[in-house]
Image 1 (tube, rainbow, N blue to C red):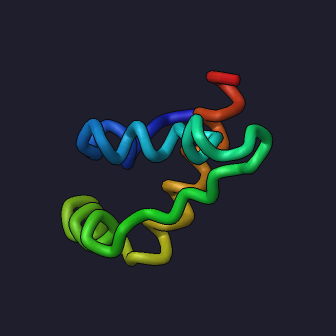
Image 2 (cartoon, rainbow, N blue to C red):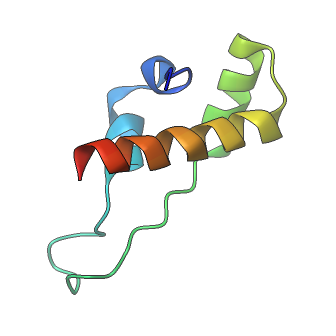
Length: 71
């Protein structure tokens, strides 16, 4: 899969995107639901020339692919 949005993100966004557990203090097994920030979505939409919905779908696909590769 070709990563389109991931290379354009800053380091903190990349870390949040690949996180699977909330924090160490929380109960293990609780999943982490990643929701991209509106500012990130708007910036990527203008850089790529896509709609915001297309950017959100691409981020979701890339996150699913990255999690399968890492874990």
